[in-house]
Image (cartoon, rainbow, N blue to C red):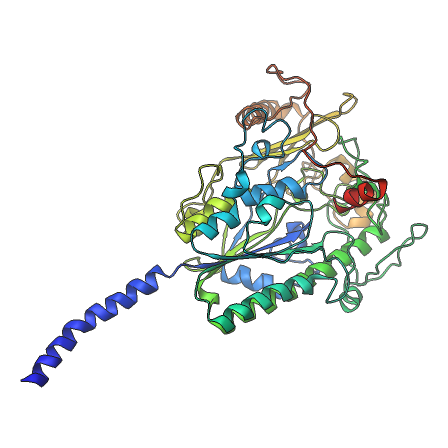
Length: 525
């Protein structure tokens, strides 16, 4: 009798036990590994340029096991240090003119006070996550960075394990080892940032050799030519054909190893250095992914790979990040994690500022009221192809109003104006027909001889072509609408002024106390 009763009670208890375990498993919150490179064009990577010489097997594996975005962008900058507003947007989820460092934003009540208390680290701390970050120092959002429980930041752009990207990888591995030793079962958010491939691009000796590059330091000589170097990009130019409002910015004239040179040998060597640094980043990502796999945490971790913005390095005759061509306005973007279809590819139409909303959504956390981003979870789940129809970009770190762009569907409009009004240019591209944004200078036989690329006859700036006058007018209207919606404080020569006057466009920052420190701050940009 007792045996039969015990058996009945056991059978009754089994479903309850199984149900409890199922609920516990279902409630196990996902980990998040957010990986961000510094100054990397999406078109360096094979996932965007299949014939690229850059080898990144771990990033390629993330793409094969997750989702690749073909339309991920950073909204722009009002400073030559494009990194700074970009990283603010990642941390707080606010649009570019609503950041605490945006010119006039605090005075106009376009940004709430004490915003750092509602940034990525702080939000996840309150939700019971363990938070850790490693990244470069400076040109970031210091108040938000300090919210992470564990902070191991340092700028590492050298060519050794201690002075380069391996240092950042080691910080994450040490953190994971500590969690493993203490049997820490809390979910984690790790912000895994790198200082490279931002210049100075001092790669490791073995990777420099692989890409035929040298850490060139002699300003009076060109670097050696080497057949192992990456080829010139398809939209390479020996010079940008017009003043874009900031051609004298440090990135365009003072990067060590490049300076103002745009010849084939200089650009190919610098691309080799960029690739050496990028492959080293990939190696560190592989080390961390292996550790997560060994810990049994990989399958329950959302992994995001991106960069704070793109980079030119010879494209359109430019070197830096202070432009709005696709190679620089766009960012690489991959997401792998639970429920994401392996090998999937989407347009997305997302901004980096959408990450706060999305990571909160994936973790079951209510985003703060200060957030302005949109969760792209519907895209990750295959329920949507894009999150928005229109994308806006801005740059005004030099002359004002500077540069703006707007994209809708296949069409993209760019406008340029210098402070003195001597350079006023409009560009219109159909990106489906002209993905490299070729302009008439790309049709020059001398340029074609260098790149080996012959543009099609219609691959041009179409802004002044009467056949596209209606489309230009439509795109001009969309740009103005976005400027008004986003509180852009500037207008161009052919736009209504909307009562806007002069604006101090420099972000709030403490002045350097001496010349040496000022030069160091400028170099860090």
